[in-house]
Image 1 (cartoon, rainbow, N blue to C red):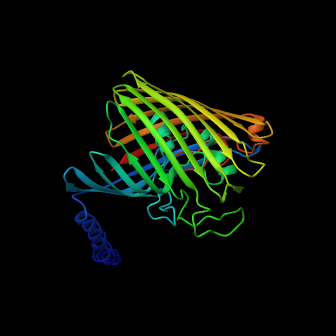
Image 2: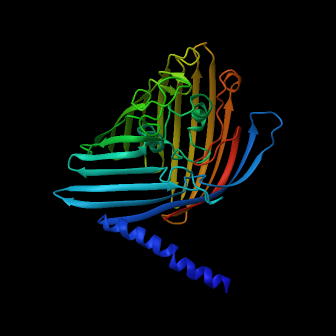
Length: 386
């Protein structure tokens, strides 16, 4: 009886609201796609940085790819022009929670396209992440993703991950059409880290309503793709007069180059990047980070294998050099175009200075879950796209 009443209440309240929301989006677009990804897996993490800490067992969501629910729409304006949108939020299926306070924390942008290319405005993936996810055999996901060897630097030292941001707020991006294999993406933002005027001018100061404290962002990503060849280069910079990473007037600069060649039976990929922090803070000024990765993907029928080797070199102004290395192995079985099972193993080695003086050891993150101080992990799971 109670179940029947609850079902009737659901039909009268929640379902009509969802239907009205979808209908309103559909009216605003010639086409509307509701899409998403749900991923659940088991992860065993071990070899903790601290002696005496035992291994960790976990049932996690978003291990091989971040769980998401999105709305993607387009409207044909005629004369070759289209307006398009993408609103995408993340969630954790193991707890049913979502990353508050942002509603569409993954992507939220509006754009227009035509013969000139595309122009987009809103929260978008950073060009550096696009390069990395394209060339990494693990797609910058799972415990095998190459970002493990330096991602903890962002978490421990830099606070806002400005050496390697995943997404940029308030971004304007231009994507050119591909001509004879060549294309270019350019992105800029007045504040990459939240609403304009929300960051302080000085360390420990109050937020500045003008742009003087904002994290200004600029990036350019030219690429060449023709048949089995794909080559990419990158220049990216985030700079602020205010407080990022508890440093005054920081400027994060990244140069990167990489490429891939698909032989059919195997796709080989490699890249190298160089990062430098310039700041008025004597303790952090001149911090450099150099990373490289070699990878291979081997598809055969419904099966695929992935392997990558990654190395990261972090150096401070005192001459301390910390090295982190990672080897990762993966296997994927595709049940269909939308569903696959996977298994991944990753092992990281940090030298003593990376563990100690520099305080930024590499640990095993995955798509949505923290490494929690562990340097080795094995995980398997199931992913479905809808």
